[in-house]
Image (tube, rainbow, N blue to C red; front, side, top):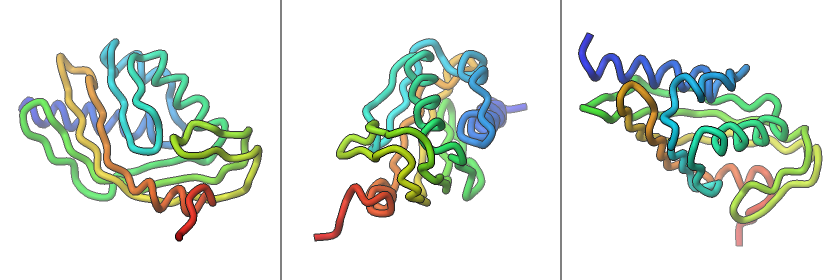
Length: 149
């Protein structure tokens, strides 16, 4: 198996077990580098396994049906894997204040569905970085946090 194929297999499992539903918190310890960087436009960057697990735990408590999945085949070159995705969830859990520009009261019932593209860097068989560009404007509008002028 080529390095690119191995990296795509790692990312495929990461997407399924970290971003899918149900999620597997143990995948962070198994597949993430100790100092993993997780960065998207909706939230402050996260660094390290514990920070990433805490982020996802809180996100999933607020959005219990949260689920993201691939929207196209993964592309790999060297240490990098690129994936397109779509997903979202319904806010039925506790108040959520993790978005950079606003928060939600408990159980708002608001739904978000949005897309994005993510670049992951694999180092020594572990996800070292996951940096994505998401359609955060759409998600924030759907959640009522951002309103059109």
